Image 1: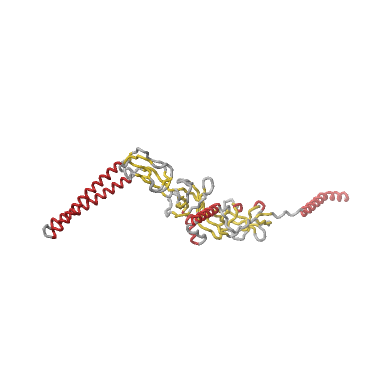
Image 2: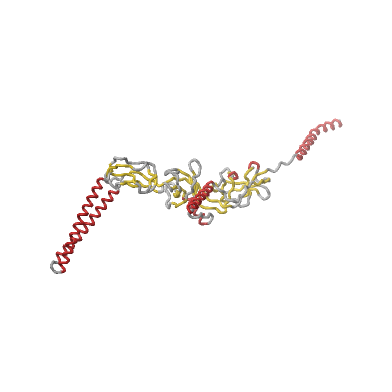
Length: 413
C-alpha cells in the first residue's frame, strides 16, 4: 500500500518536472539570442548662415506710361501714318487731318495782322507829329492825348492780331496728330474719312511705354509690418539701395532673365483685402512682358545674417499640425524637438525658433527610431553647408549683373 502511494505521487510530479525543464531550456535559448543592432540614421549639423528673406508674391504687369492719342482740332481724317502694334517715337505723325480750313484761317489772320500793323504805322506818325506841334504850341494838349491813345490802341490791336495769327498757326500744326510718348501703339480707333466733330474727346489710338515696365505686386499689411519691425530691430539686414532684388516667375515656371528693382510701396491698404501694393520696375527690351499679365514675383526684402535652415524632409508634423524635428543628443540618443518654421528658401525650411547652431538633426531613418533610443549617427551634412543657399533667382541676378557690367565695359571702350 505504501509503495503504491509513493509511485502514484511520483507519477503526479513528473509533468511539473518536465515543465520546469522546458522553461529552463527556453530561458537558455533567449539568453543566447543576439542583441539587435543599433539603427543607423542620417543627420545634418545645422549652422548659422546668411540667408535672404525671400517671398513669392502675386502681381500684375502695368505699363510704365500710357497715353491716349486725341485730336485737338476738328476735321476730316485724311491719312493714318502708323502700323498698328508698331513701335512709335515721341513726335511721330500718326494721323493727318484735312488742313485746308486751317490754312485759310491762317491766311485770314495774317491779313488782319497786316492791316493792324498799317494802322499802327499811321497812328504812330500822327502821334509823333502832334508831339512836335505841341512842343511849338501849335497844337492843343487834347489833340496830342487823342493821338497818343490812338497809337496805344493800334499797338494793342496789333498784339491781338498776332495772337490770332499764332492761334491759327497752332491749329494748323495740330492737324498733324503726333505721338505724345514713345512706346508701342495699339489698334487704330479711327479710319480715314472719319469726321472729328468740334469738342470731340474720343481717343484715336493708345500708346503704352513697355520698356522699362512696372509690375504691381501685393503683400499683406501684417507681413509688411513684421518685416519692417525685423529690419528696425536688426534681426534682418537691409539690402543695398538700388539693388536688383526682384525676379519674375513666368507661367511655365521659368524665371524672367532680367532682375527688377523695388521702387516704393503704397501708403494705403486695400480695405477689401488688407493688402498693400509694391511697385517694381523691370527692363523689358524684347517686349516679353505685356500689360495685364499675371506673374509671380520673387522678392528679396532683407537678409537674415544668422539664419538656421534644415532640409525639408527633416520636418515632421504632429497630429495637430505642429512642426518638429528629431535631434541626436551627445549620448547618441534621440529626442523630438518642436520648432517654428518660416518660409522655404533654396529647398530648405527656415527655422525661426527651436534649434541652435551645432545641433544634429535627423534627415533619414525616422521609421527606425523612438524617443530615447540609441542610434548610430551617419553625417550627411553637405560640403560648404555654412554658405547661404543660392536660389535660381540669385543665379539669374548674378547673370543679369554680369551682362550689365559687360555692356558698360563695351560702352567705355
